[in-house]
Length: 507
Image (cartoon, rainbow, N blue to C red; front, side):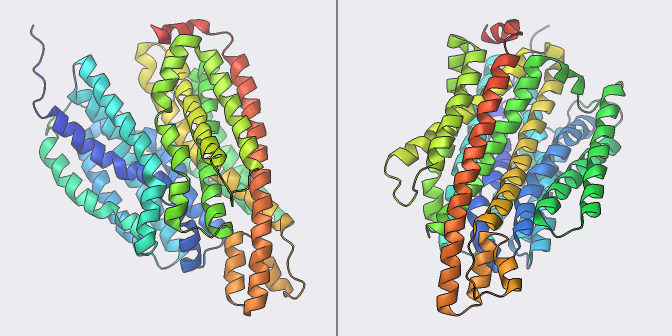
């Protein structure tokens, strides 16, 4: 039997799905430089700002696997087109939000649209390219778009905010989707193979509810706005829901997430790397964006340019990680890259960003490169430790780890920042107790309170806020360095046993 003829439109299909994927990736990082501007415009509290940023990756983490399963049931084309429409509508809603609650709601819908787009893009690439060599090239181009999108997100956000209002970072998605949706409608095949079976929506809802309740409990605990019984109740409910989800996955004949794979040390180590490295990248970038604008007085565009080294270096980490792993072995590469990333974070914690010289951009590039190598090493560890027939399940677990790591990283950095800032700030004695309590919540709140004070009092408060945030930034990066160094040790030990997995990946 002769092999099926390749689709003559396959490269156009690839172009269409990559364009569909680009706004989803941009939304992961483009918002970071807009935080100071939208905080002031919407009078958003520190907790509201965390939810605005965090709800997107957290919901994506819960929705990616069930949406991937749904697209297998009803077809990638149908789910992708629906996702594009949802994403465009949610982007318009986010751009014109009048308050923090409306923006959080729009980000919820954005996550729904994004979770419909991402699995379908990979599924369509796999179905469109039958030739293994062409498929490898297509997946390589897809990976480059993803890394480049994350890298230029802060830069595009900064450029837009230089000329337009904060909502422009969302509105930019609408014209892109108006071009991409018709292109996908015309180019994607009308008929495709689907998989029969049950779609476990209940399991997906349990995962999402559990994650959000647990994260809300953690944030509420640091925010100090709720009583201890309320915080304990919400946190316990979230933990119980996640425990029930895990139990269902381990007992189900066809689980949504193949959690039993975590019993393999290489997969456990790989998922741990994905969680911590993606969380560290997201958290450090968010912290830097606020430091650069609130403390150093940079514009959003200047802040975006300042952060280019960290994400540009992250974009090239993948191929370097593959080459290094083949040459020196996965265990050494994974452990050493994380250790160097930790040392770099410790170095950055003690630098004066007012006078960055050349050493700070180089350190940012080294941080982006080493954490990116760690992320790629996590993928090599996971995929090298499973049989071919379990590759899809392992891939779903890994993708969920990246999104969950981003969400939890932002949560952790945010709550750590809030509590440390409140302890570090030395408020002017002339400030009333009510205003003092509000100003100590975050540097964004400090600026909001200062705007309503006489000029000399406002200037003194902002000066105190800047000093406190610089101290917070130092403490935060130092603690993150310690966590990543501990991870390097754990990963090095965990990868000691399954050397066969690393070798299998190298052939």
